[in-house]
Length: 378
Image 1 (cartoon, rainbow, N blue to C red):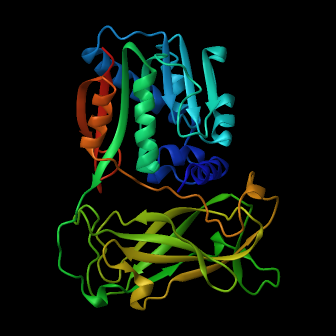
Image 2 (image 1 turned 180 degrees about the vertical axis):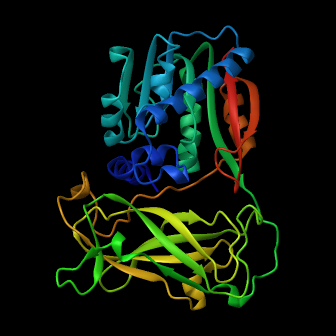
């Protein structure tokens, strides 16, 4: 997606489930992050990282820091405890509205909206520290590379930049095909979780535009085979997902959310998934389809197992920024991209900046080889 679509996506997340979009923990989906706990994760991360950075660059200054892709200010607020001034940039105006609401440091912390593919809002050699984590991975490589070059430009003498970026996908081990009769499931939701239709004869979901609703979805293994625990099969995961359909039954948002199977499930056993679903940003009548899937084999419905389809009635004022979006636009989604390590090191070298460390991390998940780069302007 281009930067304008990226902006609309993150504005959408700001209106639906902003804290989960920043730290996507399964148990926190659907607005279940407690704000104090959320910001505490930022303080913990920055405390740990500053100790590591100062071990590599003990003479790094502490006057001014930059938080790139700041979201609601989780890391910029933590940086304010160690730097005189913090500047934080984000592509989403809605995220920045939330960041300013939670700002505890007044004018010492300044939030900037930046929708460009550069950081010309700042002068050369402006920052003692530039920090970003789990941001560059969500944009096309061409944008990530331009921002990395901008980080190099913005470093003061002795300044340090720390940024995380995946390099490439992990190629899964070749595994034998699963038996065709494994893809059999019964999926249901208790009627108490749903709303009665106006005629009282059936059930539906009623939601506000952009509302996230947490549902308990029951799935029974109807096959003669045990479904494996996700931990047992690194690249072959059985999960529950959902799609949004229009009134004609056509899919307009595919694979909106996922819920993992956290235990092996024997034939005839039932598992309860807790999954948050987010209502479409425009009022209207829709359907949401719940379907099981296996990473390499696809959706169970493609093997003849029926999905659970629930009518959804969305009523109320359209979500913020809806008037800017074309009717056919999908709900917010995250893309994942990488840049080869060799290319990143080339950008750093061309800028005349010193590499202090390149450390493997798991920030991009198990399907990616990811690195944290720590560099310094001599």
